[in-house]
Image 1 (cartoon, rainbow, N blue to C red):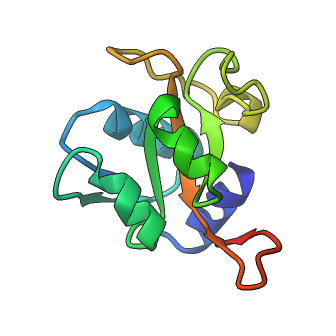
Image 2: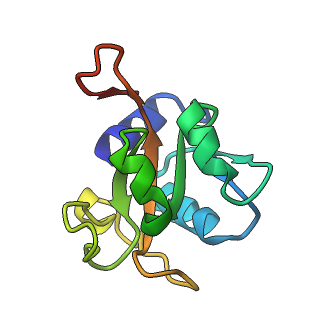
Amino acid sequence: MGELIKLAKAKPGELTYGIGGTRGTASVAVEQIKRATGVNIFGMPCKAVGADLMDAGAGTISITFNFWSILEPQVMAGKLKVLAVAAPSRLAAAPHLPTFAESGIAGGEVFGWQPPGGICCIRACRQSEDGQGVRR
């Protein structure tokens, strides 16, 4: 998350996040990050709920927020990278992922009607051409 915050501060208004509706969980998470860090991240409406994952994978948007249960296949395939979890503690299903608080963002917990696994901030990344890792 620290790298994302530095990038957002260096390029105010240039990073985008996908939203599949207004006033949803993702919007709340982004507003908490903006308030806690002073960054300016621009919301890009997606055609439908869930389209944010396709847009993130295609590089149309910079970041998005979604549930771990939805993100896991994309993350395991190396298409997306989870930066942090918007929960008070690490996810049991993915204990290697830090929370927002552990990433230096106080008040980054998002509560609401969520499936098990919590909500995650992800950054689009792509497999390098040589297959040796991921790149943004």
